[in-house]
Image 1 (cartoon, rainbow, N blue to C red):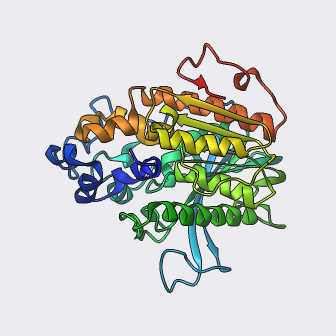
Image 2 (cartoon, one colour):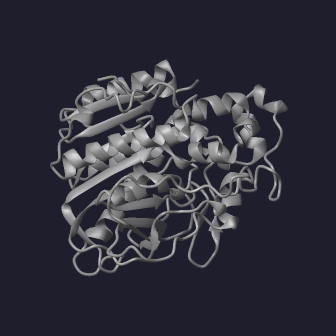
Length: 394
């Protein structure tokens, strides 16, 4: 397993089958192709359409999608595009318990992302569409998904954080996955092929994502009306977190931007080392210690550069996609056996997706509560009987 596996596998479910077979190796050659719309794997399971696991916080959650355009820089991945166009899903504590629940994704985007493996457009969500935000200034968390994964892959995590009192901005990094814009067009992933130099590619993507996250923070903390009417952000309480390359991008964003008080990396190889002695809090949450000796060494180097509060936790039975919605969805739709065995094991491990999600929600929530809201709790201090799946590495 190469040192770049921990970002590459996050993109596999969204790649054309031919490329998936190439990257997955010889064992995938005999695997059946992903089902087309209308095939058994594409329909909802017999028990009905799955629902995003209910948030654990006490506040109702509102949600809205916003399109943001950064005119200060050209798009890094599409030549000749003078500005950077992003889609962001914002979830937040709502001031009402009434409203409709938006679709998880459109059928068209579901097929673009999952190639018919399952129909994510049938998944039911918990948040209330365009609900008025609750009053008061809220801490902001920016979330970045794994490479090749949509921002929708962090729906369960962001709904939970919003139910705990956070405004959460989940960013789609255009041309790094399929992204649907308000006019209905779907922009494809332009850089999902095999890079000539994977490490240099990881560095470039990490830095580009950091710029995306910093721009989103700019927009949500600018004076005057922000992207979401009625949503008030406390600029002194900002955190960043991400899965896979999103985690690497979040650490890079914190390295560049002093407004980010704390950052978390969910199983992402760190391509741009943090500055020596970085004094702000960092949470590292891995699966199987990164899955290889090289990945563990990468995190050891990252750990040794951190000079502030830090914690490294591991889920030994999890896989790389266990920190995203993809794991519990694959379980809910019963389609794991349609994936090449090696890819399924690397991506999902042996833990149930809902169990991995519960641990991710609990520990990331505790980390942000401690460092953005000054609410320390015992969960990050010692192993917990409630989460025996979680190992304290450091």
